[in-house]
Length: 124
Image 1 (cartoon, one colour):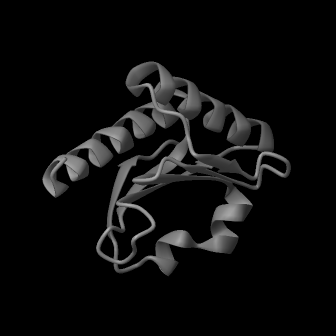
Image 2 (cartoon, rainbow, N blue to C red):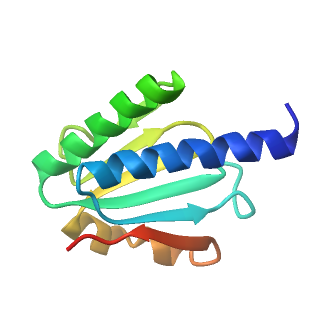
């Protein structure tokens, strides 16, 4: 697979993830293109849930929809226990789902401020 094909697949995965978050009423879903700054992933998807329960529901929905749509499972999921920050690793796309307090504390958009950011949908 060429680099261009890999980039296209990563973006398609990010789009599926963003749609799943939007359908479950995720707040302020943002796509960061971080591939030029790190080898960790091509994209970060960052989203906020309204409560610990909502964060878990968002993560569950992402996992279900990505598996159903693309047949992919995350290589790792961290943070289900406290649900202030759940991280889902899909290799080319890393999903960060926060509570409002967690997102304000960790400020990933600020940390990765050199990345190209696109706010996909804002629900309030």
